[in-house]
Length: 122
Image (tube, rainbow, N blue to C red; front, side, top):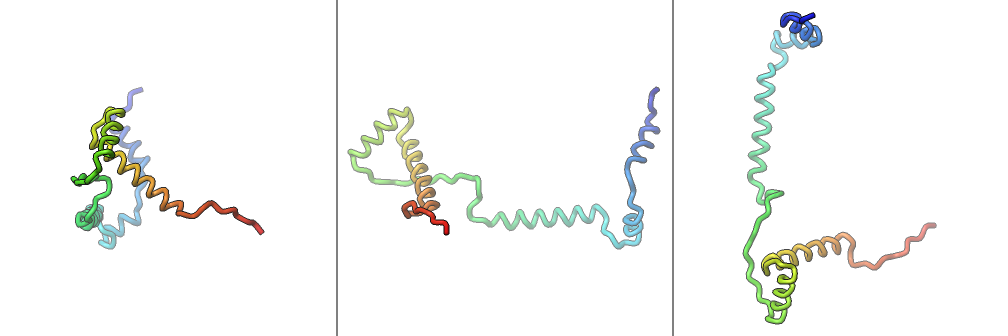
């Protein structure tokens, strides 16, 4: 048996419940319309975006800077050979070394310079 479009609409209408109290409040003007609520929400979102626009550092956006460093020739040769062994550029090796140093600093910061201690339970 085929279902007509009108029958399908009737079934959909029966599935959706109406809130008669909210309808009455809207007619009386005590509850803002959905459009007004959407506008209010959009204003809040825009104000949050404006406030975040003034942040000096945006998370997730890597910032690259050029840095000049002086390295003794012996150390430079060691770094160049290490970069050659890894088949990467000297610049990339320097970036990798700096990143691993930052990871080591984070580890030391989290775990502190203290030696392991035996915990005593009383």
